[in-house]
Structures are given as structure tokens and as C-alpha cells.
Image (cartoon, rainbow, N blue to C red):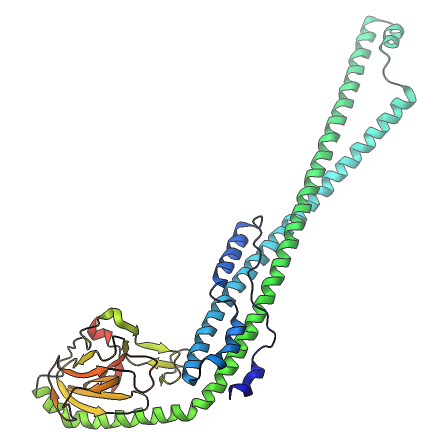
Length: 402
């Protein structure tokens, strides 16, 4: 089957690689780039992982779970890449805006410099044509001391003006050089950011292609599981219907024995809250119960999974009447205890039942009733434990405090 869906997997896909983070980037861009690179360690080589799934995992459900995990990892990486792209684009836009202001400032400086250059050229041409100030001639041609003083003051003012012109012109040329250097640096920075943006977008596109291929492969696997899932759903419905009848039959006996008070104890005394491997709530496991309120694939885990050593004792969470369902498809070896007042508990994936336990037997609270196992749809030794009221599954932690 997996060979027939090989076309779904990108061929010759390149490994997603870290990108260079330029320390001169704006801080927000540099930090986003570093964060993106830090996350790559757990997410590299996604395409190769997808191609290897059909060789490494034989069980369809396990494949779907592995693909789900990979899709979630890809989703995180895609989000990081999109955040980096958005941050980089903002930095590029900011730099472009600064460059526009900088270019306007350069135009103004260039305009002032051109005017002063023209004034300086006119002054130099005048000096070239008339010569520099001859102070001896000023003295000899003056008709009075007042005229001489006026001429000397005027000559000094001309000299000072020439010095100011040269100094101002030199400063404006320096300003022009600094402004042009800043623009060149900004253009270089924009070029680096654009290259980084291009590399990130390329990696993002590859991740999206890999994710699309993973989803397509998952759909093919799910189609193969439709028959098995239909059987599990039918079996659950049959068990639930029978338990509803048994609840009416056994409720009085269970309540008489002291059950159904709504107080439950932890079903695996040797392994506490720390042994919970999956809580109650929405799940990505394909063979769970359908719940439209959960995100895709719209499945819910109807109890808590408690994983202790294989064969660990399991006790009745409350007094009630036991009913055995050995060898079911989904739950594996299942035990249901009816407690009265609408309460019942489910114990799934058992390796076996307590010696001598039989359907219809009244079991006191805390009595060993079964042993942990991995029967039915199970990926490893654990107890699947449910609490139901009127046949409706509820979060066991509401009563157990986990």
C-alpha cells in the first residue's frame, strides 16, 4: 500500500537548513532569526522522515500517530518561518522608509553644496582675474586714514567670508559623504535581509509541500482503517447499550453494597498521578471517539491513560457489580463496574482479570479486579480508565483530583 502512495512524497527534497543571522540586522529581525534557527534542531530533515515512515512503521495507526506528530512539528516550524518573514519584511519596509528620507536629505545637501561650489568658483575666478588683496596698494591709494581703515575692515571681512565659505563647503562635503555612506550601508542591509527572506520563503514552501504530502499519506492510511474503525464504533455502541441495560439490572445490588456515592479512589495504587500518559480530552488518535467539538481529526480521548509496569494491580475505584468483556477490538480486555445512581467505570487494555472474577460479582471498593496490560488498540502497557454518568463519559480527574 505504501508503495502506491510514494508519489505523494516530494522527491529529491532538500534538507531544511539554518539560515545566516546577520548581527547587524535590526534587533527584532536578528532575534527572530536566532529563534528560528534554534527551533530547526528538532525539525530538520522532515522530508526524509516522511519518506522513511513507510519503511520503519508497519502498523497503520502508529503511522498515523507518527505523521500527526510530524505535522504538528511542521506547523510549529511554519509558524516560526512566517513570523520571521513578517519581522524581516517589517525591517525591510522600515529601512526603505529611512532610505527615502535619507535620499531626500542627500538631495538637499547636494543642492546646497552645488550652490556653494558655484559661489566658490566665482570667487576663485575673480581672484584669478583681479589678484588677491594688495594691502600696500590699499595704504598708498587711500586719501585719508578713515578711508584706509574702511578698506582694511572690508578686506578683512572678505577674507573671513572666504574662510567661512571654504569651511562650510568642506563640512557639507563631509556631510554628503556620511549621508551617502549611510545609504550604502542601508542598501547593503536591505540586500542581506532580502537574501534571508528569500531563503526563509524557500524553506517555508518546502515545509508546506512536505506537510501537504504528509496529510495526503495520512488520508490514504485512514481510508484503510475505515473498516477497522467501523468495527470499533459498532463494538463500543454494543457495549454501551448493554451496560445501559446492566445498569438497570445491577443498580440496586450495587447501591445496596455501598456503591454509587460519587466518590472514587485512584484505580492503580502502585502508580500515582505521575503515571498519567494521556489525559481526558481532544485527541489526534484516529480510532478514538468522534467529537465534532474537537479540532481535526475530531476525536476525543474518553478517559485517562495510566502507565505503570506491566501486570500492575488495578483496583475497583468504587464498590459495584463487575461485568467482563474479554477480547474486545478497541478496549482489548475490558472490565466495566456498575456502581449505581448512574455511575459506572471502565478499565481497558487489561492483561487479565483477577482470579475468580466473574460477571455479576459484587466487588468492594479497593479490591484488586484486574492487571495492567496492552490488549486491543494499545501502543504500550497502560490502563485506560473512564468514569461515566448515565452512560456519558466525563473527565475522571474531576473526581480523582489529578
